[in-house]
Amino acid sequence: MAQHGKFDCIIIGGGHNGLVCAAYLAKAGRSVCVLERRHVLGGCATTEELWPGYKVSTAAYVISLFQMGILRELRLPQYGLEILPRNPSSFTPLPDGRSLTLGPDAAMAEREISKFSIRDATAYPRYNALLERIAATLEPALNETAPDPLPLPEHWRKIGMGKRLRDGKKLWQLHGALKALGADLPEAVEILTGAARPILERWFESEILKATLATDAIIGAFTGISSPGSAYVLLHHVMGEAGGARGVWGYVRGGMGGLATALEKACRDLGVDVRRESPVNSIQTDRHGACGVGLEDGTQLEARVVASSADAHVTFEKLLDPQVLPEEFRTAVSRIDYASASAKINVALSEPPQFTALPGTGVMPHHHGTMHIGPTLDYLDRAYDEAKYGEPSSSPILEMTMATSVDETLAPPGKHILSMFVQYAPYKLASGTWDERKEAFADRCIEVLAQYAPNVPKAIEHRQVLSPLDLERVYGITGGNIMQGAMSPHQLYCFRPVAGWADHRTPVPGLYLCGAASHPGGGVMGSCGKNAATEILRDKAW
Image 1 (cartoon, one colour):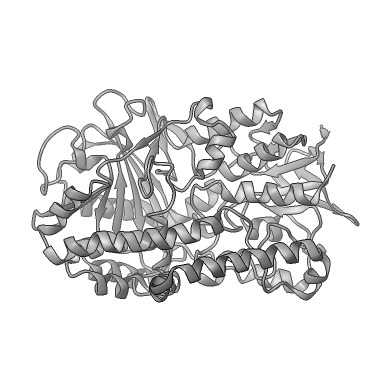
Image 2 (cartoon, rainbow, N blue to C red; image 1 turned 30 degrees about the vertical axis):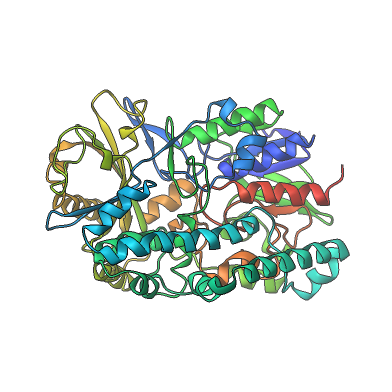
């Protein structure tokens, strides 16, 4: 039997951005309902008990970019959110038995890099300082709605003088911030638009350091380290302070779902109606704009504001009648790039990986951070070359974390969870299907890891393999793209999701985007949700 309800605002999707948006709207006195299609909240930042006693961060696995302002304003630590810093933060073993360990300890980083190059040890602090200066310049732009310097003609006439003035002010402030970079500006422009490999080769000479840093440039992207635009992601690794300090990434105690748990508690205390297993199958409109949603079970809910944390393809091409959208907007949405080449493998281990580069049993310091398998720049480039032609990398890039090294709540005593983020696994295969090939690909990933940590294959007790197709099915992200759209220059800032509509609004009055499909994009930030709430409250004075 159909059920009915009426709210000021309906949020589609209970990921972290959707919950943040809901909390700020409710905090402003609006009645809000969050509709999550799965049995668990958090979107890609979730915790699930895959096997008895094992609480697994099935998709997202670390946090740093989440806005400190949101943590404070929604009192998330008081609702149980605890972020555990990682130190050291990075470990890269080599086939010859050497290794590189990096972290926030400057003296340790200098000692480690000096094993390979005295010159690089001297250059590394200067490189980090440059990235931090650029990141500090750009971070304010992440914490506010993007301007629309190139709006569509019809949109331009409707947005009003107030928005034009706000957008002009934002662009002027960004201009001033970039100007303040002074002599750093040329390098800043290259980092924002260029390729990671030539930049790193100019700064450093040791392969292991270049490869360790280059891996950060391609996470979640179907691009190579020699491709324009890849360098931008390097900045994300010195942004954010949620891990305890700038550039320090952390684990959420209890798994990444701990963030959603804290957000849900905040939402419920603010009066938000949070509903799990409530998949939306349509966004409804009338002559005034958005007027509600229909659920798969026949439930009809009314609201004059609908904010979708789903991606643009799902929102505009699956849930909405295309006839209510201008043709030029539909065309622009259809061109959004969702190319993806990421897979996730979660394994339960009877013991930690024992790397031949740093032998020892039990949990060791290098288990705390990200463990990289990708020893050289050529290794990374070759992995991408295969994926370009629709083949999973035969020598894949592995980024692994073991949160159980610092969080005893995730697994039975003495057991561990190894989270493996793998590239490249192209969504579109040249032959076969992911359902047919994913287990063999996971076997190959384990074989590659065993070349560095021979004990791992026999230590595996359970395994979950999420191909790009699985990521699409489970989390509703088109093409398995974890960023809800590629983070390339033409799909960032004032061009996200499409040019002319970067302010969370859409051509349908009352319909907004509040997820990673909007500025500032992918990552566990919360900015998309908060910025969307700001614009909704600016538009709607109930």
